[in-house]
Length: 407
Image (cartoon, rainbow, N blue to C red; front, side):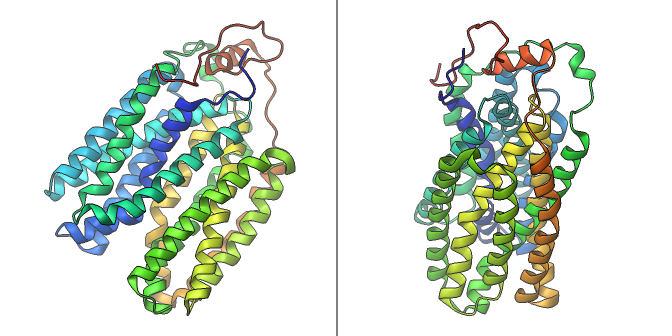
Protein backbone atom coordinates (compact mmCIF):
# COMPACT_ATOMS: atom_id res chain seq x y z
CA UNK A 1 0.00 0.00 0.00
CA UNK A 2 1.30 3.47 -0.90
CA UNK A 3 2.32 5.38 2.22
CA UNK A 4 0.07 8.44 2.68
CA UNK A 5 2.92 10.88 3.28
CA UNK A 6 5.43 9.44 0.79
CA UNK A 7 6.53 12.16 -1.59
CA UNK A 8 6.54 11.30 -5.34
CA UNK A 9 9.76 13.19 -6.05
CA UNK A 10 9.99 12.18 -9.74
CA UNK A 11 6.60 13.81 -10.37
CA UNK A 12 7.65 16.92 -8.43
CA UNK A 13 10.87 17.15 -10.46
CA UNK A 14 9.03 16.59 -13.74
CA UNK A 15 6.51 19.28 -12.79
CA UNK A 16 9.38 21.68 -12.03
CA UNK A 17 11.09 21.00 -15.36
CA UNK A 18 7.85 21.45 -17.30
CA UNK A 19 6.80 24.69 -15.60
CA UNK A 20 10.23 26.38 -15.61
CA UNK A 21 9.91 27.82 -19.12
CA UNK A 22 6.75 29.87 -18.35
CA UNK A 23 8.29 31.09 -15.09
CA UNK A 24 11.39 32.33 -16.92
CA UNK A 25 9.44 33.83 -19.82
CA UNK A 26 10.08 37.52 -18.93
CA UNK A 27 13.85 37.11 -18.84
CA UNK A 28 13.82 34.76 -21.83
CA UNK A 29 11.94 37.27 -23.97
CA UNK A 30 14.06 40.14 -22.69
CA UNK A 31 17.26 38.30 -23.57
CA UNK A 32 15.94 37.43 -27.05
CA UNK A 33 15.20 41.12 -27.59
CA UNK A 34 18.59 42.34 -26.40
CA UNK A 35 20.78 39.47 -27.62
CA UNK A 36 19.42 38.92 -31.13
CA UNK A 37 18.46 41.24 -34.01
CA UNK A 38 14.80 41.15 -33.00
CA UNK A 39 12.26 43.77 -32.09
CA UNK A 40 10.48 43.59 -28.75
CA UNK A 41 7.35 42.44 -30.57
CA UNK A 42 9.20 39.68 -32.42
CA UNK A 43 10.89 38.48 -29.23
CA UNK A 44 7.52 38.39 -27.49
CA UNK A 45 6.08 36.43 -30.40
CA UNK A 46 8.77 33.78 -29.98
CA UNK A 47 7.92 33.52 -26.29
CA UNK A 48 4.25 33.16 -27.14
CA UNK A 49 5.06 30.50 -29.74
CA UNK A 50 7.00 28.56 -27.09
CA UNK A 51 4.01 28.57 -24.76
CA UNK A 52 1.58 27.71 -27.54
CA UNK A 53 3.74 24.72 -28.45
CA UNK A 54 3.71 23.66 -24.80
CA UNK A 55 -0.08 23.95 -24.68
CA UNK A 56 -0.41 21.96 -27.91
CA UNK A 57 1.51 19.09 -26.32
CA UNK A 58 -1.01 18.98 -23.49
CA UNK A 59 -4.02 18.95 -25.79
CA UNK A 60 -2.51 16.25 -28.02
CA UNK A 61 -1.23 13.95 -25.26
CA UNK A 62 -3.88 14.30 -22.54
CA UNK A 63 -5.39 10.88 -23.27
CA UNK A 64 -2.24 9.15 -24.51
CA UNK A 65 -0.06 8.91 -21.41
CA UNK A 66 -1.45 5.45 -20.59
CA UNK A 67 -0.90 4.20 -24.16
CA UNK A 68 2.68 5.37 -24.60
CA UNK A 69 3.65 4.89 -20.95
CA UNK A 70 4.59 7.59 -18.40
CA UNK A 71 8.29 6.77 -18.33
CA UNK A 72 8.68 6.73 -22.11
CA UNK A 73 6.66 9.88 -22.66
CA UNK A 74 8.46 11.76 -19.88
CA UNK A 75 11.83 10.87 -21.39
CA UNK A 76 10.69 11.93 -24.85
CA UNK A 77 9.60 15.28 -23.42
CA UNK A 78 12.85 15.81 -21.56
CA UNK A 79 14.92 14.94 -24.64
CA UNK A 80 12.94 17.41 -26.74
CA UNK A 81 13.44 20.07 -24.06
CA UNK A 82 17.20 19.48 -23.88
CA UNK A 83 17.62 19.46 -27.67
CA UNK A 84 15.24 22.35 -28.33
CA UNK A 85 16.29 24.79 -25.61
CA UNK A 86 19.92 23.70 -25.76
CA UNK A 87 20.07 24.15 -29.52
CA UNK A 88 18.40 27.55 -29.30
CA UNK A 89 20.91 28.62 -26.64
CA UNK A 90 23.90 27.64 -28.77
CA UNK A 91 22.94 29.44 -31.99
CA UNK A 92 22.41 33.04 -32.99
CA UNK A 93 20.49 32.21 -36.16
CA UNK A 94 16.96 33.48 -35.59
CA UNK A 95 15.20 30.66 -37.54
CA UNK A 96 17.09 28.06 -35.50
CA UNK A 97 16.21 29.83 -32.26
CA UNK A 98 12.53 29.83 -33.24
CA UNK A 99 12.65 26.14 -34.11
CA UNK A 100 14.45 25.35 -30.86
CA UNK A 101 11.86 27.28 -28.85
CA UNK A 102 9.03 25.36 -30.53
CA UNK A 103 10.69 21.97 -29.97
CA UNK A 104 11.64 22.85 -26.41
CA UNK A 105 8.15 24.16 -25.69
CA UNK A 106 6.62 20.91 -26.88
CA UNK A 107 9.04 19.02 -24.65
CA UNK A 108 8.07 21.14 -21.63
CA UNK A 109 4.40 20.54 -22.36
CA UNK A 110 4.99 16.79 -22.64
CA UNK A 111 6.77 16.70 -19.28
CA UNK A 112 3.97 18.73 -17.69
CA UNK A 113 1.38 16.35 -19.17
CA UNK A 114 2.99 13.29 -17.60
CA UNK A 115 3.42 15.10 -14.28
CA UNK A 116 -0.21 16.27 -14.21
CA UNK A 117 -1.46 12.77 -15.02
CA UNK A 118 0.58 11.25 -12.22
CA UNK A 119 -0.32 13.94 -9.71
CA UNK A 120 -4.03 13.35 -10.36
CA UNK A 121 -3.58 9.74 -9.22
CA UNK A 122 -1.98 10.70 -5.91
CA UNK A 123 -3.94 10.47 -2.65
CA UNK A 124 -3.22 14.17 -2.01
CA UNK A 125 -2.74 15.93 -5.37
CA UNK A 126 -2.78 19.37 -3.74
CA UNK A 127 0.25 18.53 -1.60
CA UNK A 128 2.19 17.23 -4.59
CA UNK A 129 1.23 20.29 -6.62
CA UNK A 130 2.41 22.69 -3.91
CA UNK A 131 5.74 20.86 -3.73
CA UNK A 132 6.08 21.23 -7.51
CA UNK A 133 5.23 24.93 -7.35
CA UNK A 134 7.67 25.36 -4.49
CA UNK A 135 10.40 23.72 -6.54
CA UNK A 136 9.83 25.75 -9.69
CA UNK A 137 9.40 29.01 -7.75
CA UNK A 138 12.64 28.48 -5.83
CA UNK A 139 14.56 27.49 -8.95
CA UNK A 140 13.17 30.38 -11.01
CA UNK A 141 13.93 32.85 -8.21
CA UNK A 142 17.53 31.63 -8.01
CA UNK A 143 17.91 31.86 -11.78
CA UNK A 144 16.51 35.41 -11.86
CA UNK A 145 19.28 36.38 -9.44
CA UNK A 146 22.02 34.37 -11.17
CA UNK A 147 21.38 34.98 -14.88
CA UNK A 148 22.29 38.71 -14.85
CA UNK A 149 25.75 37.73 -13.56
CA UNK A 150 26.35 35.13 -16.29
CA UNK A 151 26.95 37.61 -19.08
CA UNK A 152 24.92 39.06 -21.91
CA UNK A 153 23.22 37.09 -24.65
CA UNK A 154 20.03 35.19 -25.25
CA UNK A 155 21.30 31.73 -24.32
CA UNK A 156 21.50 31.72 -20.52
CA UNK A 157 17.80 31.25 -19.64
CA UNK A 158 17.33 28.74 -22.44
CA UNK A 159 20.39 26.80 -21.32
CA UNK A 160 19.10 26.81 -17.74
CA UNK A 161 15.84 25.16 -18.83
CA UNK A 162 17.74 22.59 -20.90
CA UNK A 163 20.07 21.72 -18.02
CA UNK A 164 17.14 21.38 -15.63
CA UNK A 165 15.48 18.91 -18.00
CA UNK A 166 18.74 16.97 -18.25
CA UNK A 167 19.07 16.85 -14.45
CA UNK A 168 15.54 15.45 -14.09
CA UNK A 169 16.20 12.57 -16.50
CA UNK A 170 17.60 10.08 -13.92
CA UNK A 171 14.43 10.40 -11.82
CA UNK A 172 12.27 9.07 -14.65
CA UNK A 173 13.52 5.58 -13.84
CA UNK A 174 10.92 5.41 -11.06
CA UNK A 175 8.00 6.26 -13.33
CA UNK A 176 5.79 3.37 -14.52
CA UNK A 177 6.81 1.86 -17.85
CA UNK A 178 3.20 1.44 -18.94
CA UNK A 179 -0.16 1.74 -17.25
CA UNK A 180 -2.25 -1.33 -16.54
CA UNK A 181 -5.15 -0.19 -18.69
CA UNK A 182 -3.37 0.97 -21.79
CA UNK A 183 -5.82 -0.87 -24.04
CA UNK A 184 -8.86 -1.09 -21.82
CA UNK A 185 -12.37 0.02 -22.81
CA UNK A 186 -11.82 3.04 -20.57
CA UNK A 187 -9.84 4.64 -23.38
CA UNK A 188 -12.99 5.21 -25.37
CA UNK A 189 -15.14 6.61 -22.60
CA UNK A 190 -16.05 10.26 -22.28
CA UNK A 191 -14.32 12.55 -19.85
CA UNK A 192 -16.06 12.59 -16.45
CA UNK A 193 -17.73 15.81 -15.26
CA UNK A 194 -17.67 17.41 -18.73
CA UNK A 195 -19.49 20.59 -17.70
CA UNK A 196 -17.27 21.30 -14.72
CA UNK A 197 -14.11 20.47 -16.67
CA UNK A 198 -15.05 22.62 -19.65
CA UNK A 199 -16.02 25.58 -17.48
CA UNK A 200 -12.78 25.28 -15.51
CA UNK A 201 -10.71 25.12 -18.70
CA UNK A 202 -12.40 28.21 -20.13
CA UNK A 203 -12.08 30.30 -16.98
CA UNK A 204 -8.47 29.21 -16.48
CA UNK A 205 -7.64 30.55 -19.93
CA UNK A 206 -9.06 33.91 -18.84
CA UNK A 207 -7.50 33.70 -15.36
CA UNK A 208 -4.01 33.04 -16.71
CA UNK A 209 -4.42 35.69 -19.38
CA UNK A 210 -5.17 38.31 -16.72
CA UNK A 211 -2.21 37.27 -14.56
CA UNK A 212 0.27 37.40 -17.41
CA UNK A 213 -1.19 40.57 -18.88
CA UNK A 214 0.02 42.25 -15.68
CA UNK A 215 3.30 40.31 -15.48
CA UNK A 216 4.14 41.14 -19.07
CA UNK A 217 3.99 44.91 -18.50
CA UNK A 218 5.01 45.12 -14.84
CA UNK A 219 8.51 46.22 -15.73
CA UNK A 220 7.19 49.05 -17.85
CA UNK A 221 4.83 50.13 -15.06
CA UNK A 222 7.73 50.38 -12.64
CA UNK A 223 9.98 52.26 -15.06
CA UNK A 224 7.56 54.54 -16.90
CA UNK A 225 4.76 55.18 -14.40
CA UNK A 226 6.35 54.72 -10.98
CA UNK A 227 9.60 56.34 -12.26
CA UNK A 228 11.86 53.73 -10.65
CA UNK A 229 15.37 52.79 -11.70
CA UNK A 230 15.86 49.48 -13.50
CA UNK A 231 17.85 48.09 -10.57
CA UNK A 232 15.02 48.99 -8.18
CA UNK A 233 12.43 47.29 -10.37
CA UNK A 234 14.62 44.19 -10.52
CA UNK A 235 14.97 44.18 -6.74
CA UNK A 236 11.18 44.39 -6.36
CA UNK A 237 10.74 41.39 -8.66
CA UNK A 238 13.34 39.38 -6.74
CA UNK A 239 11.60 40.09 -3.43
CA UNK A 240 8.22 39.29 -5.01
CA UNK A 241 9.43 35.90 -6.24
CA UNK A 242 10.81 35.17 -2.78
CA UNK A 243 7.46 36.11 -1.28
CA UNK A 244 5.85 33.70 -3.73
CA UNK A 245 7.73 30.89 -2.00
CA UNK A 246 6.00 31.84 1.24
CA UNK A 247 2.68 31.63 -0.55
CA UNK A 248 3.42 28.12 -1.80
CA UNK A 249 4.57 27.00 1.66
CA UNK A 250 1.42 28.47 3.18
CA UNK A 251 -0.79 26.68 0.66
CA UNK A 252 0.93 23.40 1.43
CA UNK A 253 0.54 23.91 5.17
CA UNK A 254 -3.16 24.76 4.95
CA UNK A 255 -3.91 22.05 2.40
CA UNK A 256 -7.60 21.11 1.94
CA UNK A 257 -8.55 22.34 5.41
CA UNK A 258 -10.90 25.00 4.02
CA UNK A 259 -11.84 23.13 0.88
CA UNK A 260 -11.09 24.54 -2.56
CA UNK A 261 -13.91 27.00 -3.15
CA UNK A 262 -12.84 29.53 -0.50
CA UNK A 263 -9.13 29.72 -1.45
CA UNK A 264 -9.93 29.92 -5.17
CA UNK A 265 -12.77 32.44 -4.91
CA UNK A 266 -11.36 34.69 -2.20
CA UNK A 267 -7.84 34.43 -3.64
CA UNK A 268 -8.99 35.52 -7.09
CA UNK A 269 -10.84 38.50 -5.62
CA UNK A 270 -7.73 39.56 -3.70
CA UNK A 271 -5.59 39.12 -6.82
CA UNK A 272 -7.88 41.50 -8.69
CA UNK A 273 -7.17 44.11 -6.03
CA UNK A 274 -3.42 43.54 -6.37
CA UNK A 275 -3.64 44.07 -10.13
CA UNK A 276 -5.44 47.40 -9.64
CA UNK A 277 -2.82 48.44 -7.07
CA UNK A 278 0.15 47.54 -9.27
CA UNK A 279 -1.31 49.01 -12.44
CA UNK A 280 -2.02 52.36 -10.75
CA UNK A 281 1.33 52.55 -8.93
CA UNK A 282 3.06 55.93 -9.07
CA UNK A 283 5.72 55.29 -6.40
CA UNK A 284 7.90 52.52 -5.00
CA UNK A 285 5.66 51.68 -2.05
CA UNK A 286 2.53 51.13 -4.12
CA UNK A 287 4.37 49.26 -6.88
CA UNK A 288 6.20 46.96 -4.49
CA UNK A 289 3.09 46.30 -2.39
CA UNK A 290 1.02 45.30 -5.41
CA UNK A 291 3.69 43.10 -6.99
CA UNK A 292 4.68 41.33 -3.78
CA UNK A 293 1.09 40.68 -2.67
CA UNK A 294 0.23 39.40 -6.14
CA UNK A 295 3.17 37.00 -6.16
CA UNK A 296 2.14 35.64 -2.75
CA UNK A 297 -1.46 34.98 -3.81
CA UNK A 298 -0.92 33.74 -7.37
CA UNK A 299 0.72 30.37 -6.55
CA UNK A 300 -1.74 29.73 -3.72
CA UNK A 301 -4.75 29.96 -6.01
CA UNK A 302 -2.94 28.12 -8.81
CA UNK A 303 -2.16 25.17 -6.52
CA UNK A 304 -5.82 24.81 -5.56
CA UNK A 305 -6.96 25.09 -9.19
CA UNK A 306 -4.54 22.37 -10.28
CA UNK A 307 -5.76 20.20 -7.42
CA UNK A 308 -9.37 20.88 -8.46
CA UNK A 309 -8.65 19.87 -12.06
CA UNK A 310 -7.00 16.67 -10.81
CA UNK A 311 -10.08 15.84 -8.73
CA UNK A 312 -12.33 15.90 -11.80
CA UNK A 313 -10.69 12.83 -13.35
CA UNK A 314 -8.37 10.36 -11.56
CA UNK A 315 -6.72 9.63 -14.91
CA UNK A 316 -5.50 13.23 -15.02
CA UNK A 317 -7.00 14.19 -18.39
CA UNK A 318 -8.80 17.28 -17.08
CA UNK A 319 -5.66 18.29 -15.17
CA UNK A 320 -3.73 18.23 -18.45
CA UNK A 321 -6.43 19.99 -20.48
CA UNK A 322 -6.97 22.70 -17.87
CA UNK A 323 -3.21 23.20 -17.65
CA UNK A 324 -3.00 23.50 -21.44
CA UNK A 325 -5.81 26.06 -21.46
CA UNK A 326 -3.89 27.96 -18.80
CA UNK A 327 -0.80 27.88 -21.04
CA UNK A 328 -2.81 29.41 -23.87
CA UNK A 329 -3.86 32.22 -21.56
CA UNK A 330 -0.26 32.66 -20.44
CA UNK A 331 0.83 33.00 -24.06
CA UNK A 332 -1.87 35.58 -24.85
CA UNK A 333 -1.42 37.59 -21.64
CA UNK A 334 1.56 39.82 -22.47
CA UNK A 335 0.09 40.86 -25.81
CA UNK A 336 -3.27 41.61 -24.17
CA UNK A 337 -1.63 43.71 -21.46
CA UNK A 338 0.44 45.63 -24.00
CA UNK A 339 -2.56 46.39 -26.19
CA UNK A 340 -4.73 47.53 -23.27
CA UNK A 341 -1.94 49.68 -21.85
CA UNK A 342 -1.21 51.26 -25.24
CA UNK A 343 -4.86 52.09 -25.87
CA UNK A 344 -6.02 53.18 -22.41
CA UNK A 345 -3.03 53.40 -20.06
CA UNK A 346 -1.89 51.16 -17.21
CA UNK A 347 -4.56 52.10 -14.62
CA UNK A 348 -7.42 51.37 -17.02
CA UNK A 349 -5.71 48.14 -18.06
CA UNK A 350 -5.59 47.10 -14.42
CA UNK A 351 -9.26 47.97 -13.88
CA UNK A 352 -10.34 45.95 -16.92
CA UNK A 353 -8.31 42.92 -15.85
CA UNK A 354 -9.62 43.17 -12.28
CA UNK A 355 -13.25 43.28 -13.41
CA UNK A 356 -12.64 40.28 -15.63
CA UNK A 357 -11.20 38.34 -12.69
CA UNK A 358 -14.16 39.21 -10.49
CA UNK A 359 -16.51 37.90 -13.17
CA UNK A 360 -14.72 34.57 -13.66
CA UNK A 361 -14.29 34.10 -9.90
CA UNK A 362 -17.98 33.16 -9.79
CA UNK A 363 -17.84 30.08 -12.07
CA UNK A 364 -14.44 29.07 -10.66
CA UNK A 365 -15.84 29.06 -7.14
CA UNK A 366 -18.98 27.26 -8.28
CA UNK A 367 -17.00 24.44 -9.90
CA UNK A 368 -14.83 24.13 -6.81
CA UNK A 369 -17.90 23.99 -4.59
CA UNK A 370 -19.75 21.24 -6.43
CA UNK A 371 -16.81 19.06 -7.48
CA UNK A 372 -15.33 16.30 -5.34
CA UNK A 373 -12.94 13.51 -6.15
CA UNK A 374 -14.80 10.78 -8.05
CA UNK A 375 -15.10 7.42 -6.37
CA UNK A 376 -13.28 4.41 -7.84
CA UNK A 377 -16.25 2.95 -9.64
CA UNK A 378 -14.69 0.33 -11.87
CA UNK A 379 -11.74 -2.02 -11.89
CA UNK A 380 -10.06 -0.30 -14.82
CA UNK A 381 -9.75 2.98 -12.94
CA UNK A 382 -8.62 1.09 -9.85
CA UNK A 383 -5.90 -0.66 -11.80
CA UNK A 384 -4.62 2.55 -13.35
CA UNK A 385 -4.56 4.40 -10.04
CA UNK A 386 -2.58 1.53 -8.62
CA UNK A 387 0.06 1.86 -11.30
CA UNK A 388 0.55 5.52 -10.35
CA UNK A 389 0.86 4.59 -6.69
CA UNK A 390 -2.66 5.21 -5.30
CA UNK A 391 -4.45 2.05 -4.21
CA UNK A 392 -8.21 2.16 -3.59
CA UNK A 393 -9.29 0.85 -0.20
CA UNK A 394 -11.07 -2.18 -1.63
CA UNK A 395 -8.10 -3.33 -3.69
CA UNK A 396 -5.77 -5.96 -2.18
CA UNK A 397 -2.43 -4.47 -1.28
CA UNK A 398 0.06 -4.85 -4.13
CA UNK A 399 3.47 -3.25 -4.56
CA UNK A 400 3.27 0.23 -6.07
CA UNK A 401 6.08 2.05 -7.87
CA UNK A 402 8.42 3.88 -5.49
CA UNK A 403 8.60 7.50 -6.61
CA UNK A 404 10.74 8.63 -3.69
CA UNK A 405 14.22 7.89 -5.00
CA UNK A 406 15.99 7.95 -8.32
CA UNK A 407 16.81 4.75 -10.13
